[in-house]
Amino acid sequence: MRFFAHHPVIRCLGAHNLPRRLYSTSVFDHPNAAQFLAAAGSTESIPKLYGLPEIVVTGRANCGKSTLLNAVLGRKTLLRTSKKAGRTRELNFYGVGLEPGKLVVVDAPGYGERGRAEWGKIFDHYVQTRKQLRRVYILFNAKNMMNAADTQMLQHLSSFLISDRGQQPFTLQSVITKADTVPPEKVDEVISSMRKQIWEAAPLCLPPVITSAAMSPPFGIDKIRQNIADVCRR
Ligand SMILES: Nc1nc2c(ncn2[C@@H]2O[C@H](COP(=O)(O)OP(=O)(O)O)[C@@H](O)[C@H]2O)c(=O)[nH]1
Ligand SMILES: [Mg+2]
Image 1 (cartoon, rainbow, N blue to C red):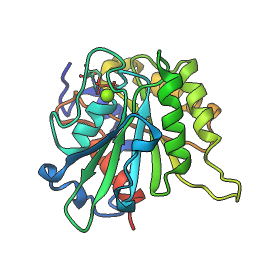
Image 2 (cartoon, rainbow, N blue to C red; image 1 turned 90 degrees about the vertical axis):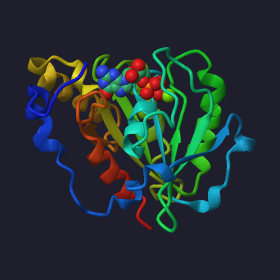
Image 3 (cartoon, protein in one colour; image 1 turned 135 degrees about the vertical axis):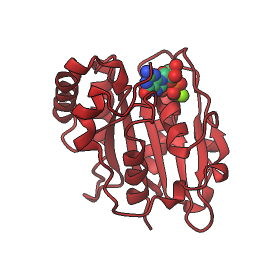
Image 4 (cartoon, protein in one colour; image 1 turned 120 degrees about the vertical axis):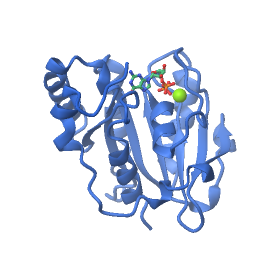
């Protein structure tokens, strides 16, 4: 489904989604420089990547992780997207930007499905040990809203947010995807209800950025770019 800039969904959401220019997003100005670096299907194969600042995207299968990252990177097909759930089985690492402003984005497998136990261990290991990890983005599909797996994952990730020494190793940012799939008259209600559930499950999680990769032009992508650039600032 495609919408245009005057669509009521954008009128409802627009004011909250104007990107704040805090830090240059120029790292995303070179889509052709974005490249696949490595896939890790085991803890041993997680690449070191020279400590470049890194972010990871997680969420239920099919919530739009790979599509959102393609939009953020300005590429159509760098990341494989799929109508079928559960296609990504590994952590996939992508390099972004030209030297010296590079950063790394990581696409993770969906949770809440068969196979979670095995890759869940890899994901947890990665999140708990990755020194250069700046922020975990957790995505929720506006069409499906939140379920028990989402709430559990929010609580699970929250348990990693404060280290033994009382420091916060990384931050947790929520994102609501596929805003175009909600009828305009329901958008306010759906977003408010999701925002409340996120806050109740994980008070430390940052409030959701609203996105749609299917709108024309895509909605909320600049805000995500700004968010990533800010948190990866060195
Ligand atoms: N309507 C709509 N569909 C989307 C959006 N983002 C992704 N999709 C579709 O949702 C499906 C799953 O997307 P994908 O990125 O592969 O999800 P992933 O499993 O979380 O990586 C694909 O058919 C996408 O085209 C969006 O913003 N709006
Ligand atoms: Mg994917």
